[in-house]
Length: 142
Ligand code: SF4
Ligand code: SF4
Figure (tube, rainbow, N blue to C red):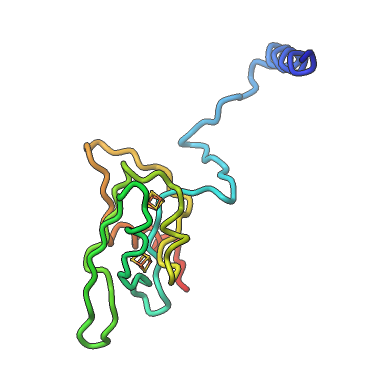
């Protein structure tokens, strides 16, 4: 009981004698150090062939508790490969639970460290291209 009070008091006294000490992170100039297990916006992953890894199975949309993922699949006529013709994620509704990442059978969606999601619009829907571009910027493919 007394110890936390003393610790707080010592901190205040230290700050009092060192007014230049910065206690507030100077965001956005100073970038925050995120924990390694931080869960940001779900991002679509890219395969070695440069295309989306997603096979449009729809499992992520099924498990999403916020129902914020829309997937509409199609089949590539030449390769017979399934792909998402439409993949949309409503960032306003996402609660960053990570269920979509867990459910995906091909690791096509991963929550990385994208957290700056503010917008001037009254909706924040990321389409397939935007979700893939986040990964392209990182130059990750597997
Ligand atoms: S992180 Fe959770 S809420 Fe967000 S899209 Fe994935 S399953 Fe839905
Ligand atoms: S991201 Fe994964 S779970 Fe979601 S539709 Fe694509 S392959 Fe299926």
